[in-house]
Length: 276
Image 1 (tube, rainbow, N blue to C red):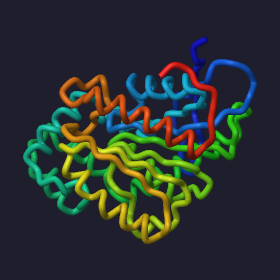
Image 2: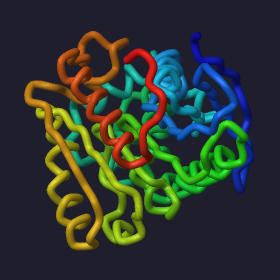
Image 3: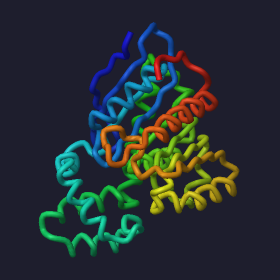
């Protein structure tokens, strides 16, 4: 049997956001659940496929769209391509400094500015703090579902979503496990608030992100929190995304998937397993 799925809407403190919910096949037993947090592309076909893969492994998987509304209309693949062209000319730490980012966006050709402004918005720490509250509403929603074991929730995120997976761990003390795929660190001052075990998976050819991992490891160790990480030599940013041939690194993606499943098994307890 294949997993069942449906589109849902989740009420957050300030709005309603769309989501894609995928259930394991089988009977009425309660399952662990995973929040699948998207890349800059939003909840596209790839994110839905990732949610379905988790459902096939026995997890209820929910992929919320943090860009629901106007932001999703701006963050189209074509516009993101324009932004990537601009970022190729920019210093690697640009997105971590809102003031520098605003100045850079203003210096670009007019057709690039709206998408760059959108990038700047979703990278802004204050906006990301709001997204974290949206995600907290998502975990609360999941815990109300009869198919979910409310004591066994985890998150996983990719790129932008990797950063948000870490931020969710800082605001949900009941989250059991958080996976970061090549995402920026959470605010290091918030690391002591984390109660979840954290796994980070990074590309060796992604220095702008991977180079900051030792800071997170140090902060997690100082706070007495559980942090594991693995860097894949030869893998670039977004190496897990098999819809992007220019960055997909099949060997690393396969190994990372198995590491995530093993990590969840340790953190959430075993679940009935489907096909990998």
